[in-house]
Image (cartoon, rainbow, N blue to C red):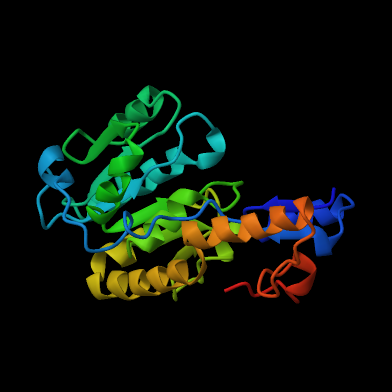
Length: 257
């Protein structure tokens, strides 16, 4: 290939391991519309769902169709958390798949309709409203690239919990811009969620760092201009701008944050 783009550095490193030249590999993100995804939105989601204004809300928006999203682990951790603090509310949204098995797991774990809301597929035009109505965004898959929903949650200044994947660690530094747990570690997830729910100041601090991180390089416009310059270099020989660095120009990638 003359040019390879990927939405996380670990994917590009995998391409190099398969034989690609690192100087031809560029990270391009799907990007976030910062006008739509911002912390100061005034949503009506809590009122619509009957959630008290002061109730801590944990939001999980990943697909119900694939087991590697570990929705069952989030439900189990939430059930334990709500036995300790019964005003915590979970919102589960899924852009694909059948939520019924997970609703059954929630009910079996003691999470009734007052403690957890399954809201199905959220129109993208309203996704930011759900984010800013939530206190904690959680996404703990076993495999993933750079999730757009993660970047959107960061852009809304939410406290983030992610799994310890390379694609997530590129964005979230544990204790600085969010919290990190190992995939399928229910105990760690329960502990971290409890710490975040108990400490509103910590949520604000982590959310501010996450917002700054997203603003630095996750903008939709910047990424589209980036890929446009790459395509132009192939089509008409235009030089790639110096600031659009290839994987091989980035140096050591062990500490992406």
